[in-house]
Image (cartoon, one colour):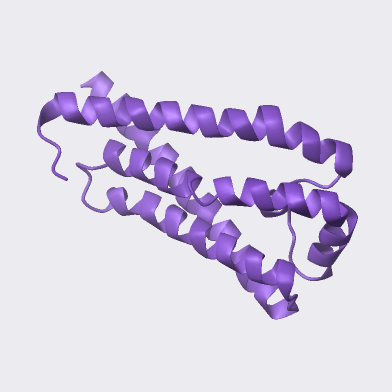
Length: 158
Protein backbone atom coordinates (compact mmCIF):
# COMPACT_ATOMS: atom_id res chain seq x y z
CA UNK A 1 0.00 0.00 0.00
CA UNK A 2 1.43 3.32 -1.08
CA UNK A 3 0.80 6.38 1.01
CA UNK A 4 -0.15 9.31 -1.20
CA UNK A 5 0.41 12.70 0.29
CA UNK A 6 0.48 14.18 3.71
CA UNK A 7 -3.20 13.51 4.35
CA UNK A 8 -2.79 9.71 4.06
CA UNK A 9 0.25 9.75 6.30
CA UNK A 10 -1.53 11.89 8.91
CA UNK A 11 -4.50 9.49 8.89
CA UNK A 12 -2.19 6.48 9.37
CA UNK A 13 -0.20 8.18 12.11
CA UNK A 14 -3.37 9.25 13.93
CA UNK A 15 -4.80 5.73 13.62
CA UNK A 16 -1.62 4.12 14.91
CA UNK A 17 -1.39 6.56 17.84
CA UNK A 18 -4.99 5.69 18.73
CA UNK A 19 -4.16 1.97 18.60
CA UNK A 20 -1.11 2.44 20.82
CA UNK A 21 -3.27 4.28 23.36
CA UNK A 22 -6.00 1.61 23.23
CA UNK A 23 -3.58 -1.31 23.59
CA UNK A 24 -1.66 0.37 26.41
CA UNK A 25 -4.97 1.24 28.06
CA UNK A 26 -6.05 -2.40 27.97
CA UNK A 27 -2.69 -3.44 29.46
CA UNK A 28 -2.70 -0.82 32.21
CA UNK A 29 -6.38 -0.73 33.10
CA UNK A 30 -7.36 -4.36 32.65
CA UNK A 31 -4.44 -6.79 32.66
CA UNK A 32 -1.95 -5.19 35.05
CA UNK A 33 -4.39 -4.79 37.99
CA UNK A 34 -5.49 -8.42 37.56
CA UNK A 35 -1.88 -9.60 37.46
CA UNK A 36 -1.09 -7.53 40.57
CA UNK A 37 -3.83 -9.41 42.48
CA UNK A 38 -2.25 -12.75 41.53
CA UNK A 39 1.44 -11.91 42.03
CA UNK A 40 3.87 -9.21 43.05
CA UNK A 41 6.05 -10.03 40.03
CA UNK A 42 5.80 -7.82 36.95
CA UNK A 43 4.85 -8.93 33.46
CA UNK A 44 7.63 -11.28 32.33
CA UNK A 45 8.99 -9.19 29.47
CA UNK A 46 9.10 -6.11 31.70
CA UNK A 47 11.41 -7.79 34.24
CA UNK A 48 15.03 -8.91 34.29
CA UNK A 49 13.87 -12.48 33.85
CA UNK A 50 17.00 -14.34 32.70
CA UNK A 51 18.24 -17.51 34.36
CA UNK A 52 16.39 -19.09 37.26
CA UNK A 53 14.49 -15.88 37.98
CA UNK A 54 12.24 -16.76 35.02
CA UNK A 55 11.20 -20.00 36.76
CA UNK A 56 10.61 -18.10 39.98
CA UNK A 57 8.24 -15.70 38.16
CA UNK A 58 6.38 -18.52 36.38
CA UNK A 59 6.00 -20.54 39.59
CA UNK A 60 4.64 -17.51 41.42
CA UNK A 61 2.15 -16.80 38.62
CA UNK A 62 0.53 -20.20 39.13
CA UNK A 63 -2.19 -21.43 36.77
CA UNK A 64 -4.35 -18.30 37.05
CA UNK A 65 -1.40 -15.99 36.45
CA UNK A 66 -0.20 -17.99 33.46
CA UNK A 67 -3.69 -18.02 31.94
CA UNK A 68 -3.85 -14.23 32.34
CA UNK A 69 -0.31 -13.79 31.03
CA UNK A 70 -1.11 -15.83 27.91
CA UNK A 71 -3.99 -13.44 27.15
CA UNK A 72 -1.65 -10.48 27.66
CA UNK A 73 0.95 -12.20 25.53
CA UNK A 74 -1.49 -12.51 22.61
CA UNK A 75 -2.02 -8.76 22.69
CA UNK A 76 1.76 -8.35 22.86
CA UNK A 77 1.99 -9.96 19.41
CA UNK A 78 -0.13 -7.11 17.96
CA UNK A 79 1.52 -4.23 19.82
CA UNK A 80 4.98 -4.43 18.14
CA UNK A 81 3.41 -4.12 14.70
CA UNK A 82 1.49 -1.04 15.82
CA UNK A 83 4.34 0.83 17.53
CA UNK A 84 6.87 -0.33 14.92
CA UNK A 85 4.70 0.97 12.07
CA UNK A 86 4.04 4.25 13.86
CA UNK A 87 7.71 4.94 14.58
CA UNK A 88 8.70 3.82 11.07
CA UNK A 89 6.20 6.28 9.57
CA UNK A 90 7.46 9.07 11.80
CA UNK A 91 11.05 8.36 10.73
CA UNK A 92 10.26 7.51 7.09
CA UNK A 93 12.31 10.38 5.65
CA UNK A 94 15.45 9.45 7.59
CA UNK A 95 17.40 6.86 5.58
CA UNK A 96 19.22 5.15 8.43
CA UNK A 97 17.06 6.04 11.43
CA UNK A 98 13.85 4.63 9.95
CA UNK A 99 15.20 1.12 10.53
CA UNK A 100 15.53 1.57 14.29
CA UNK A 101 11.82 0.85 14.96
CA UNK A 102 12.06 -2.33 12.89
CA UNK A 103 14.96 -3.51 15.06
CA UNK A 104 12.83 -2.92 18.17
CA UNK A 105 9.77 -4.55 16.60
CA UNK A 106 11.67 -7.62 15.34
CA UNK A 107 13.38 -8.04 18.71
CA UNK A 108 9.99 -7.82 20.44
CA UNK A 109 8.61 -10.62 18.24
CA UNK A 110 11.66 -12.82 18.84
CA UNK A 111 11.39 -12.13 22.58
CA UNK A 112 7.69 -13.08 22.54
CA UNK A 113 8.36 -16.32 20.67
CA UNK A 114 11.19 -17.27 23.03
CA UNK A 115 9.11 -16.49 26.12
CA UNK A 116 6.37 -18.76 24.75
CA UNK A 117 8.97 -21.52 24.30
CA UNK A 118 10.33 -20.90 27.82
CA UNK A 119 6.90 -21.17 29.43
CA UNK A 120 6.44 -24.63 27.93
CA UNK A 121 10.03 -25.89 28.03
CA UNK A 122 12.46 -23.93 30.20
CA UNK A 123 16.10 -23.63 29.14
CA UNK A 124 18.53 -21.32 30.89
CA UNK A 125 20.34 -20.61 27.60
CA UNK A 126 17.08 -19.66 25.87
CA UNK A 127 16.19 -17.40 28.81
CA UNK A 128 19.45 -15.47 28.30
CA UNK A 129 18.82 -15.19 24.53
CA UNK A 130 15.24 -14.01 25.15
CA UNK A 131 16.47 -11.43 27.64
CA UNK A 132 19.02 -10.25 25.06
CA UNK A 133 16.14 -9.60 22.66
CA UNK A 134 14.28 -7.76 25.44
CA UNK A 135 17.26 -5.43 25.83
CA UNK A 136 17.53 -4.98 22.06
CA UNK A 137 13.79 -4.22 21.91
CA UNK A 138 14.09 -1.47 24.49
CA UNK A 139 17.22 -0.10 22.86
CA UNK A 140 15.45 0.08 19.48
CA UNK A 141 12.44 1.77 21.06
CA UNK A 142 14.42 4.27 23.09
CA UNK A 143 16.61 5.21 20.12
CA UNK A 144 13.55 5.47 17.83
CA UNK A 145 11.64 7.71 20.22
CA UNK A 146 14.79 9.76 20.84
CA UNK A 147 15.25 10.18 17.08
CA UNK A 148 11.64 11.31 16.66
CA UNK A 149 12.01 13.85 19.48
CA UNK A 150 15.37 15.10 18.16
CA UNK A 151 14.07 15.48 14.59
CA UNK A 152 10.90 17.20 15.81
CA UNK A 153 12.92 19.73 17.81
CA UNK A 154 15.32 20.23 14.91
CA UNK A 155 12.47 20.83 12.41
CA UNK A 156 10.67 23.26 14.72
CA UNK A 157 13.82 25.31 15.23
CA UNK A 158 14.39 25.74 11.50
